[in-house]
Structures are given as structure tokens and as C-alpha cells.
Length: 84
Image (tube, rainbow, N blue to C red; front, side, top):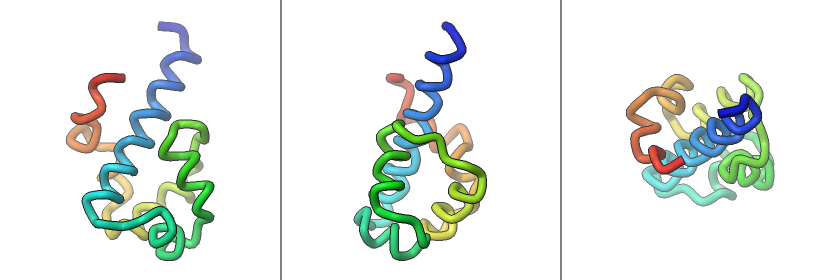
């Protein structure tokens, strides 16, 4: 698979893992935005795979979700994303 395709797949997988964590916590985009200090549309674009988050953004999301940053990228968080 060409690198660009792999990058797109990884962005979608990360976004799906973040969305799954948000839904598991019962949070809306708005509530996660408030808790993380990020804009709702930023989170929406990350969740849809349109935006590649920087490390500090991932840390803010993890803080808002109440999880360790690595939890968003560990194998268990990505198991449900195997369709990508």
C-alpha cells in the first residue's frame, strides 16, 4: 500500500478510536470540546480522519476523555477498526 494510503488509513483508525472512547464515556462532541479545550469542529475532523492531530492535541483529547494518551493508540483501542 502506498504511504499516502497508509497515512489515510491510520488517521481513520485513530479517529475511530477517539470516537469510540468518546461514545464509551457518553460524551458529545460539545462536551469533549469543553473538557479538552479544543474546538468541536477540530474533534469532528480528527474523528472523521480529515485532520492529522499533533501530539499536544492528542494529549488534550486524552485529558478530556480521562484516559492516558497511549490508550488512544494501543492495540485494544484499534481492534474495532480492523475494517480499514
